[in-house]
Length: 131
Image 1 (cartoon, rainbow, N blue to C red):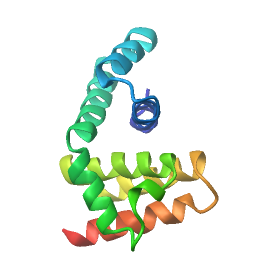
Image 2: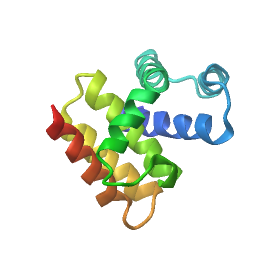
Image 3: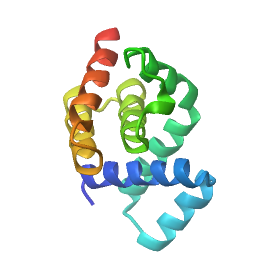
Image 4: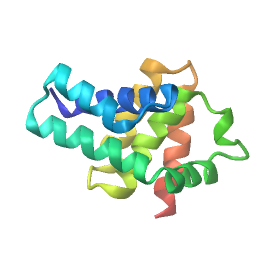
């Protein structure tokens, strides 16, 4: 599995956890048991999913600060999930900024609405300018 595929998988797992309001441990264990990803992929997915959830309040505040009068509860769930994952990677990992933004925009375009890519790009651009 490529890093891009691992990132997409992490986004789907975060979406599932949020949408179903399931426990992260259960969702992750089921996924790892069923798909049996490589050790490297498993570590990445586990780190970003748990890290995003652990820092959710900070991440959501960061996203909301850069959303120009939009409240998080008005975002589509896909856009919010992509933004949460990307925000975690920007703030808590050493993944290059250009990779995080490019892949977040691609995920938003693939799974979100027609305007999701530019919406995600705009918010993430504001977040990186903050640093």
